[in-house]
Image (cartoon, rainbow, N blue to C red; front, side, top):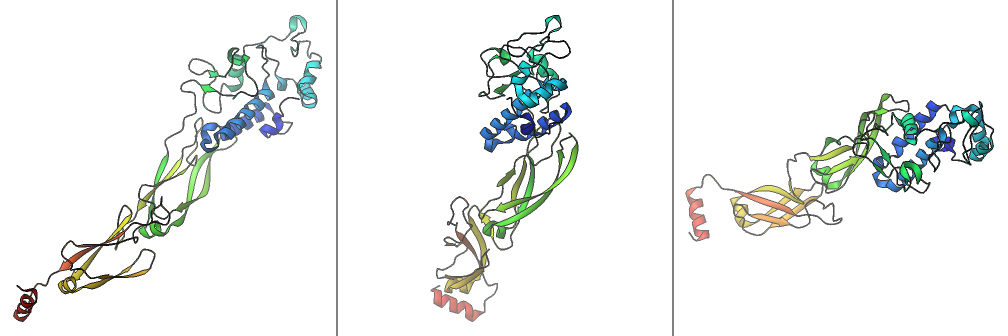
Length: 351
């Protein structure tokens, strides 16, 4: 029995030639290896199976180069094939007075089947390829891994498309990029974002229609500005080309209290001269709403920086690890001092 192309191409047994072509186009576009980079081996196997099913549903190529006949073009032969497979066709009497060179290649006399070159058959069936390239003509040939000519050594164990000549692979447009603004709080704790997109797709009839979809983006704690989230093939579809990838790029919204520097957080804090000399406590609310009280015992001079370990941003590539919190101090000097204050400072400071 030959390939069960009805089941593989997902068509019923009353499918017309046009139905088979549409089914082949839809499935081949879906399982093209270039569209399935993460499951390439599975896609190649499925793509090969679809190709073989379509080939059997339309035309048979023999290893000696003879075309064994267009099964679908003859209702009688198609009925025999559906019931008995290729073996049944080999035993079937010739129809319409013409020979049908299956098996040993014997024909029906002067009106026997006139074989055409395999390239011509492929041009007839695939001349308007669902992938946007012709299979014959200069610069548009299709090659198989074969030791006996273009089709001579093709077997079920070979990949159906070993290589394509230059310029025949379906074009994939550049990715469509869009910014995804995130607050520093979201990048600290992580968040889930829902993005509704509207895009153009090509339906099974080759028409462009609008489609909406909700995409879920899990923003991981510690992600930085410029991080890219890619949704393969979620861009607009066009005839004769692969759909573009959709890429969201993390953008960081300004934060009023903290500034990010890599994995560290920076905060500016003002203290009075008395606090700078006599000590103080810095009270902060973290990005995840915790309250911190940080005692300062050192004398704070202008430009002094206090580092609090592990209170910075989470490090995305090192779960459980954080950067540092850096507190930069600004000392507010008094604009006036009473005479007795001046004298007291000189006495205390030894000036």
